[in-house]
Image 1 (cartoon, rainbow, N blue to C red):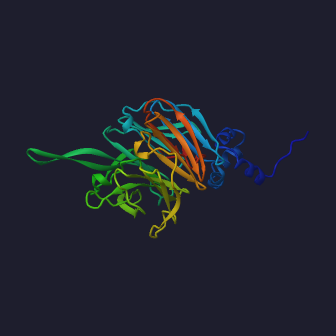
Image 2: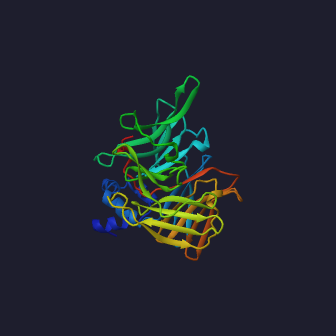
Image 3: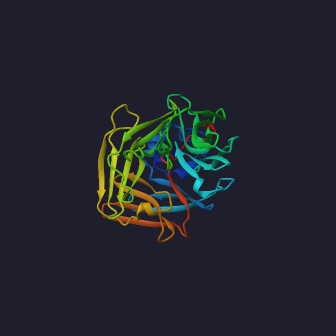
Length: 368
């Protein structure tokens, strides 16, 4: 039987519907396919159709990929541990995604740059081990994407012969030049991220508040192009300590969503920004959905860093529970509620990171 050569546009259409694991294997089929999987147009096309996928890491060496079908199916697979070291202190571990790559900070050791689908790992090691990692970004105004790491040093200064005070010295580590650049900024302690920031379009964003004057919460950002801290926008609701929790997430790649949970009723309200975050317009929040009550645990009681993601009116949340000592994936949409336990044991410290770009550019082309 003679083989049939499909038209190229049909071939591309079929490939765009395959899961990322298959695409990684198919890179070796031919040069044409390998080049296609690195094409930005194809990556964007695949992203629209891709099912939500996450990487889940525990304090042990176990890691999992989590693939979710919006029909209600959650598939969990263990993935190889590609890092050559372990964190010295679990509470000083930071993991974040930036354009399809995972950056994992190993305190006083370095930063691993990981493409989990291609199983490629790079390593960034600072000469000064006192540098504390906060987040990763890049100058979006330049054509070449050169990653930079925002962090700080714990420093002291003498106020008098008998008095000293501590302060943060902000700094940027430029991966291409392997050099530190210190930032002269008045940014106070309470405006630094107390949770892992989000990396969106090259800049970092996180929740902050004016303390102790008003406790008014807003989104703070670090702009890598201008190398400055600045407020981005106010939040659509208040945080009351001891009665509710706020969690910030990325919505549709270039917007924000904000989840507020009431501890007493477990009621959840979610807002989203109306426009893309890189537009020079006033930020407008829209009430996206309200869940009067759910079976989700109180986020304030979780030991796993709580993270959530929204796909087509479906909430997917990863968080832990003190009652069971396990970390679970929850899926909530209307009357539907799904739960799957990822790991067991007492108080596993873990992360769940969403990778929005699963077919990232080959690792060799990233300047790290």
